[in-house]
Length: 318
Ligand code: 5GP
Ligand code: MN
Image 1 (tube, rainbow, N blue to C red):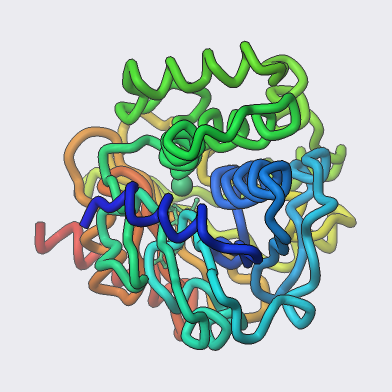
Image 2: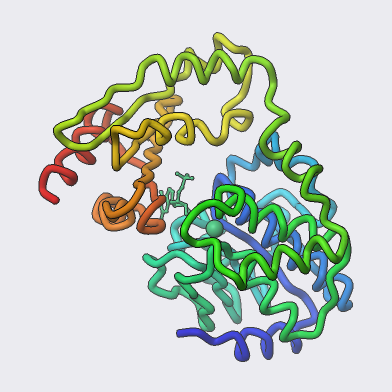
């Protein structure tokens, strides 16, 4: 399934490239899409980048070069070549699913272990810590050079998906990739501060509400909490300004598995993390979502309590 050469072949031949990533993009999704898009534009391609409604760039990613980004309704409806980054299954393209189905050629670049390969060409490497790393391999193969802007985008993907080079997916190759990004002009201190230390003040009260509500269930080695609309309204901030809330829950040493449910009006969104051995990717897949063994998620049509019960039951079943 690992077809980097075939992907490079299609990309080299293309005049126009339509690039996307999963809905509700994170640093790796948007960083890979924009970084690769900028490189393709420098190589003379006509490039558009977009992602599904709700078309909101998370607050902490707005410092990225966003010039290539267009609203999803301006995205080519029948692209000659569509390249999709960091998207574990096709439904995660949201309102751009139809565009991906109409594409003459669809290339999928991803590192989710649950990805079954929904493209004509699939470059899926579950051992890659970030999709940005695969994007870098692809640029190298194409012979397309890094610029400061490209490197900044890809660096964001490498930093965020490895928890600032902390998780087990931090490999020598990934660190070498980050070194190349810094060599090309990415500034770790700027990226670090923009991503992790630029929250609006109201974020602190959301952290207080969510951590204050956390429940530890020692019998299941499990900690969970819920974020509700009132937390955001009370703080006067938007959902796009509160990424990373699961990271405050997961740090309790008493629990192997952590879960945060965002109950913000629509279907609830469930984030899961595990420390050492629980396969949250498998739990998410059974619930219609996906992800990685140590970080995964799903959306759920029932209540937050029911979503927590689903995870608890999966943990109890082993
Ligand atoms: P997060 O909890 O940060 O939103 O997501 C953790 C991981 O699970 C990411 O790799 C993300 O792509 C994946 N993930 C989160 N929600 C979903 C979902 O609804 N479906 C799928 N397939 N993957 C998800
Ligand atoms: Mn990723």
